[in-house]
Image (cartoon, rainbow, N blue to C red; front, side, top):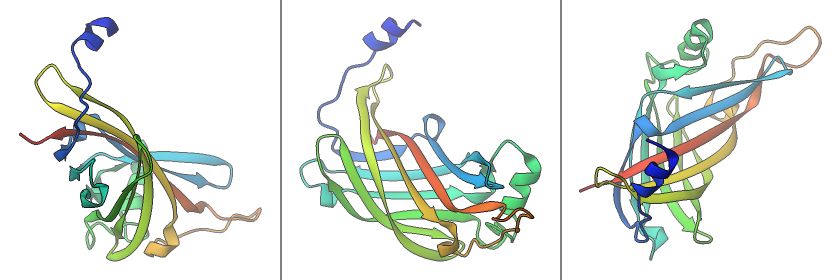
Length: 191
């Protein structure tokens, strides 16, 4: 299928209001952190599910719920992933999931949404706000109504009790406190 064929197979959807299920096979929940104060390490969570209600007329009535399987962390290095799932970081035996539940949804223009909610990691819940850009909507060739959003936020991992670190001989620490979360979301409207 060429790009032209693909473009012809979808049509824009102007009314995106409704209940949606996250399409995990076409979404990415990523993160990045500085390592040894010299480089950025990136990873993603491979297993997650979520739902959303989008109310374009009354954005405050919108909501998002997301559950991430912490054992699905993938940085491309098995030893690092094993360390992240250990008690030093995520402690997946005791806390197998991370959750996000929205508490407030606002819309500043046609494409920008601010979603505030409780992010729970290792049993600790803290409010975070994520700004999302609506990247598109379409009726796909299979009859599904899809919406896309991209967003990011930065947080201090220490606020969630993720405090493990190691001092570097030259000063600084092995893992930055600041973690950036990135969301590339595709969701399908429920039938």
